[in-house]
Image (tube, rainbow, N blue to C red; front, side):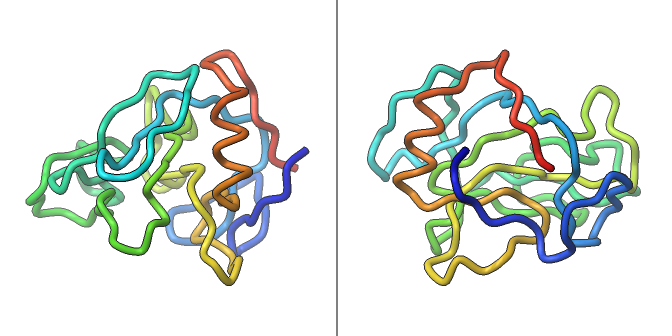
Length: 147
């Protein structure tokens, strides 16, 4: 068990896009996105560099819903290159994937917590030292249980 911050909407089994909730249940880590201009961390999951043109579609009307997209992108999306350090290290999870059900929630990541440790928009956030520790322990078969 590692202390973390969850979504401001609590933990929900019936997650919906924009509800601010963290989905209940097991999540599997698919890959680690990391800013190449930040310190490297050892990982047992595949690693991909974050770029200024990497985004994540959260638009339920798009065929790219809950998938990485190249920026600029004309539908609603999140930028994965952020100046506030929250996405310096981002674990992409398997939540609502293969296939993505539109409206069920997108971009459920595991990332760095705000310095004030405020709740997220639905993601799971850790202090840097704890996230680095977690990254070194998980592989693609690890299940992370949200309760």
